Image 1 (spheres, rainbow, N blue to C red):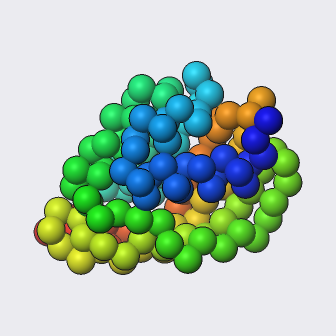
Image 2 (cartoon, rainbow, N blue to C red):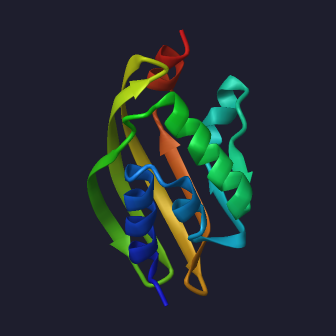
Length: 129
């Protein structure tokens, strides 16, 4: 069974490889991605279930075709949870996009139960100007 860190590594790798289906397959049937600060701009902040997660990632990669997680640093790691910081440096809707994310992943039965990420909203707002 995969640990939380192994699941996060696989998730980042699949997104970097432009494979939304493989990334989404890592999630439990009721697994979710949460980006709570997106609510501050009226955007959906929680996506639940592998199919919805696959569609969300595919939409993100369409707007940010060079989206890649880089400089991943793990700070807390247990078999069930991992906390890391990671960056993205690319374009979003054709505009430069640099971002530092913080993510907490909760694993359950070898699947992602929850990936909760925080980010700086300023680069997000600039990418929508």
